[in-house]
Structures are given as C-alpha cells and as structure tokens.
Length: 92
Picture 1 (spheres, rainbow, N blue to C red):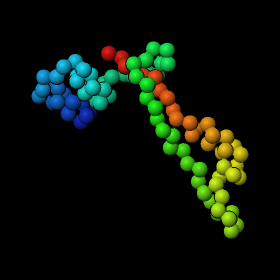
Picture 2: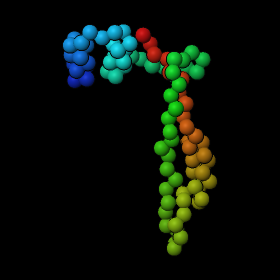
Picture 3: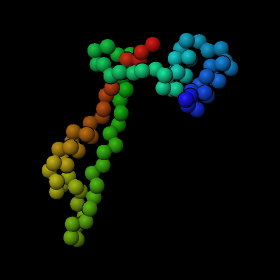
Picture 4: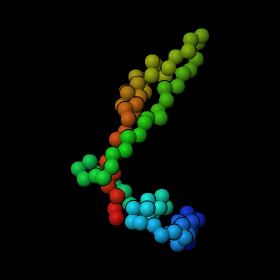
C-alpha cells in the first residue's frame, strides 16, 4: 500500500523538473533515503538540544527538584542534559 506521503512526493516530482539535489531532499522528506550515524564517515553533523526535565514536587511545605532527592535521577540528568551530536551519512 502506498502511503499518502509517497503519493504527494510522487506528484511533486512529476509536476516539476527538479535537479538531483532537490530530488534528494524531496526523497529524504518522504523517508526514502536511509541515514546512518557514522562518526568516521559522515556528510553532516546534527546537534540536538536535550529535552529532559528535572521536575519539581512538594515535600511537606517545601518545593524540591527530583534531582535533589534522588541521586540516581541526578546522574541521569547530568548525562542526558548534554546536547546530542549525530554524524549522518545518507545512502544515495
């Protein structure tokens, strides 16, 4: 079964004369291009900001952060707050 995304992509490709770079980007958006993370052989580096949260909670009359109470969560938080770095290689 052909997905709606694939149908739209095909219509775009049929309507316009696209150069190879444009076709590549259209196919990438459609999920037709495979990507692997390879720090030794890559085409582009992508940095992703961390979205981890250190939630607050009420402990008696005080408001505390989870990392203040749970040392395991503090370790996870410290590790996961670092920005992620991906070295992407596209299969063509």
